[in-house]
Amino acid sequence: MKELKISMGIWGINNLPDRFNTRGFKDDIPVLDRIRLVGETEGMDGFELHLPTEITTETEADVRRVMDDYNLSMVQLCGHTWTERQFVNGALADHDPAIRAAAVDRVKEALDMGARFNVPISVLWPATDGSDFPLQSDYFALYDYYVDSVQRIMEYLHANNYTTKVCLEPKPFEPRSHILYGTTGQALSLAMEINDPNFGINIDVGHAMIAGEVLEDQFSLVLRAGKLFHTHFDDNDQQADIDLPPGTVNFIRLVQCIYVLDQAGYDGWYGLDLFPYRDDPVKFMKLSVKNLRLAQSVVELLNERGLAEMRRQSGAGPEISELTMACIREATA
Image 1 (spheres, rainbow, N blue to C red):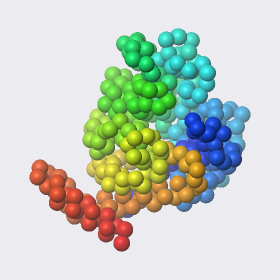
Image 2: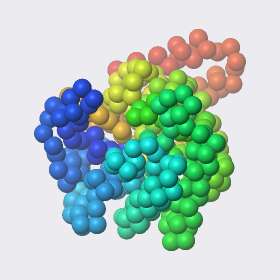
Image 3: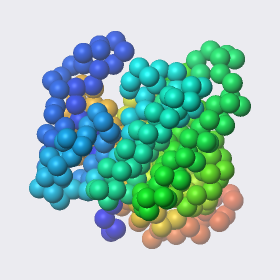
């Protein structure tokens, strides 16, 4: 069985407030201790984080020491462009050129630090770019601004000979009512417009589900274009992005994803974007590793039982469903 490379976003290993309890239910956990918890969890190979909220130039030596102690990889480092007052109405697509420049500079800063850690991925999330009210935003302008900002980022990346892949992460809503480039197809349209070998997409499974997307469809679409550079796994009921461990709400959807990734020969990271508001984050990580590996075992059985040939038959839906359930039962026996 191929060993999956699994990373954890350390933003989920902390006291997590929500809109009804802004102080959260736990105690804060220092960043270095969060990285240690990842390293102490069997099956975890890397971690993901933000600049400047989880790492700065003053703390990077300490972060490097801890990650080396546990033989972890820093998999993804992105610049926070949605947690400060200056980004209240937007970041890379804000109408104010000074705000856009500040957002671009934050991404550049993350790329600089990421290069020192050989970080393979840096994610862009247009969390505050978009709208809340009908007719609030001039989308023609927003798209122009965002494309220009991304082009500036990619020019900087190549001017410094960085090898980091920059990924757009689509999400339809939250925190804005409508986030720019909110669906997988919209994100792919930007990737194709930018047309840069280092610019692609990070599919967050939970985001795709609350957008009502069919996961195997969207993964196939992006993989076919050669633009899937990273993944975030989690689960929800398709109503809200609750970020439960993958496979806990609908295990078959997880099998779908792993099957398509295996079919395409994906060899990237399997990131975890989890928010255990009330639960132990270590339990969330352990359950995620277990479910990812279980789904992988099911996919291997499906391959052995001839699923590829069955999929070439247009009327084999019931038979494929029966086979899938049989393989799940066998993998869990």
